[in-house]
Length: 270
Image (cartoon, rainbow, N blue to C red):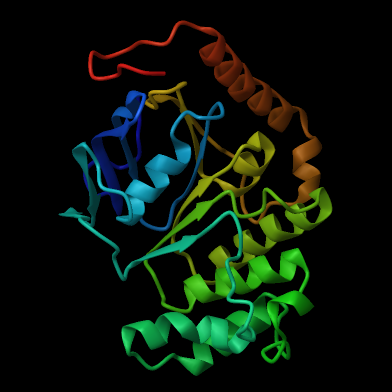
């Protein structure tokens, strides 16, 4: 199975295992999960609910430690939050008492660094938020708040951007708009992106590869290259080729969820 460029990956996950110790027993969330993401590649991760997608992403970010295995960035272990790894959450998480400009500047204040005003202005213009710097989160729509969160993450110029279902709460029209925006930003300034989503269609539209995780404990069950050229239009989503690819991935997820889950001795509770 091809899991990216294993020789020179930008981001590598090797035998990642995560066990949560709970009051009711140990829970094995990830089991020897291995994958690689090449530089400037967009990879989406899909799978049944509870399969460990978010656990995998947070482990990649350095915010969650692994029980075993390792995360590598440019061949070096990631042991904690890393300045070259940006993270966009399921919610925008903008501070309500700060306007948009102050929210974007907040990470720089924490790091004691001076923000690149020209780069931030470029990003705000690119996502259609130029002129909204004085607005507070309550004055912005959900889509605008997520655009601001993307600008905040990219303002630090990370070489890897991790996105944890950032558009799941948006309506379908706004979600499609945000997917086009992510691709446009990536085409303008390519970076390595790992995108967690429940939407197979979203994964296909955005990605170079789609990785399917097994039911918990999460392992790489299968992966699919996405052969469609960029830039992609929404019209391509109505083609037979996309339908067939969507159906194949969906059957893998449904079939895996219905199948018997392999267990390791370490997992004592489901």
